[in-house]
Amino acid sequence: MTLSFPNPTRAYDETRGQIRFIGHDGLNQVLFLLPVAAFDRAGTSSRKERDYLLAFDRWRERILNAARAAYQSRHRHTIELDISTFGSSLKST
Image 1 (cartoon, rainbow, N blue to C red):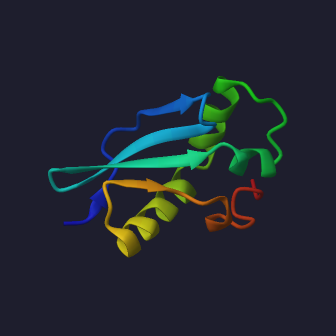
Image 2 (cartoon, helix red, strand yellow):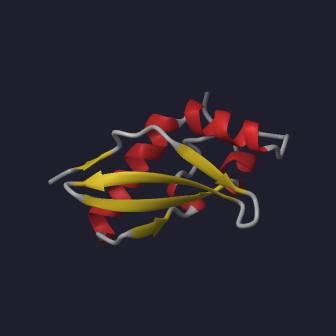
Image 3 (cartoon, helix red, strand yellow):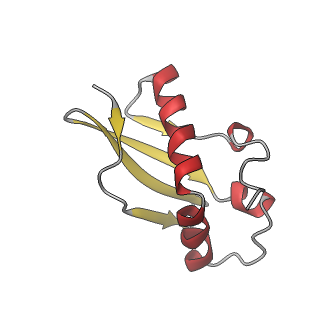
């Protein structure tokens, strides 16, 4: 099976400073955690939940592609995406 993201839901975890989203590999769910610091580096000056979620939506395809690559190399049920995974990709608009 291949990893897919049929549900566009994402959630901001203020305590951990992460956005959570879920992918599916067949019947298996995979939880992805993205540090919001990735958006701070991209020039998001406001640190509000709404701003982080909008930034996630703006860069959704790039984030999901990075998530697919991370899953392909790790095949775990929970994957924390590293900020360095994105390099400058979240900086471009």
